[in-house]
Length: 114
Length: 113
Image (cartoon, rainbow over all chains, first blue to last red; front, side, top):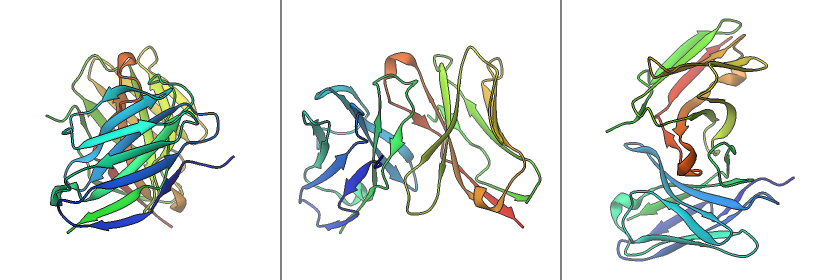
């Protein structure tokens, strides 16, 4: 069974631009979550989608948004990029939406904002 | 305010010995705890979990212990192998939070042969 696939692996953007990251979950998984990893803050929860609905959102500004499609694939968008948005963005999928369903992570998209 | 803390940034152990990774938490609402392992350039990989109704869970070489009164959990790896060298993250959540995990900042384990 294929794992969680994230594209692209690397991105370089300029301040003020916007970016869209893509995630394909494990087949059959209906929940997709997004996390940001930085050296200073570690892994931080961005948001979770289940059956095309956002179920939960972390403490990030409105510039960070996402969506989920009917095939469970998800995209994450960051608008008006800032230098501090440089990070590894990780997508994770799980069978169910509960906390007891372990997350399976992709290898991430490394975003660099210059 | 860090709700999940891994106070040791690194740990070095010899092959064959026991590795003990520690994690403390502050939020008594947490009812499910997980450990993830991360190699460079890869996403975290789920290792083992424990519900707050238990105090121990084993899976092969990995055992997680939970001490609710101390708000402390630990991951024991016995015996340690060089392939276990990675960053280990402790994470916690509560039922209503869905898949929103609160992660510690990680402990880098180095197992030497």
